Image (cartoon, rainbow, N blue to C red; front, side):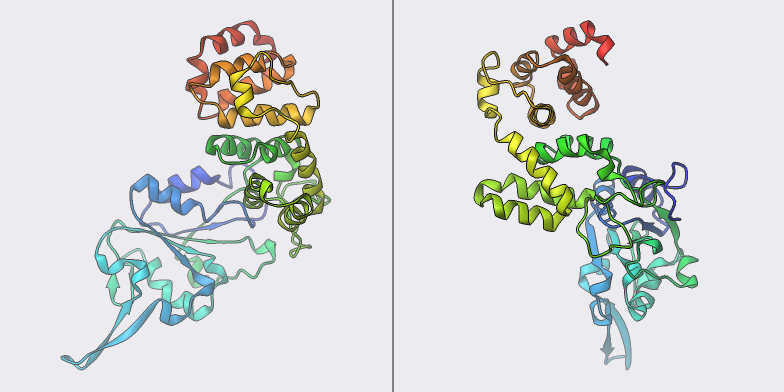
Length: 354
């Protein structure tokens, strides 16, 4: 279960698709820290058009799940579930029991009826037949306190979500349009930062999560996004604060390298200058600054700005033009690119570079 290889693991999209299309299967989605397991909730909910219910299992007590209520008319008690589960509304929802394998045993036991195939319920209230329930947790080899008993394992389908590789993360970052180009360019330049400790030959990779150093800040899809948020707001604080915050987010080595990319970025012309004056705007000379321009362009370009940015990129060395073409063709903006005459002409003339 700790070995990552195609065929016995799934990526984010595969996990979400399976969960959305198997509402009676209770999937336990496992994977190393920071790879986006919890983000599967929104993806599944969006696929089905249902409300997303996030349940933070390790921080729950029994009273947060259901409580006995006295029925004075019958002289009995009933268990009423907490309203956060929305089962009382009688409508389908998507419930994610996040970090289930770190929960206290009594809490896990109280949640167990939701894992049943026939008549899943919480307390005395049954869930809607189309309600989707799935669980998340870490690999046992992560060493962060996950444990499950045999009677739980028998009720779930255990799937391992693999970590996005650098190319996949870069494509996601470019498609969101909110990730700092400095971080995207850095990940593209140092792809081993998105390797997994479960991959062969990664024992000495000091950038990533390593179970033997669980308290160390490291690079993961989640922490890279957090670093992006810090870099995007760097105009609000000084450089000492920037490096301190990055070290505390992605670790010392990654922070120093990202800081260098920030320095490259600060030497670039403003976006408005590039789009307004593509023939005269300054062209960067360092590889790092060129990479930031490429990845920033993929993230920011629109139908209206594509032509001037393409004209600007036409002044770069051929390798950077090719890098832009390849990245834009893999992104969500490929339709914009291929509908542009200048881009189509460039591709026709530069097939040997692609």
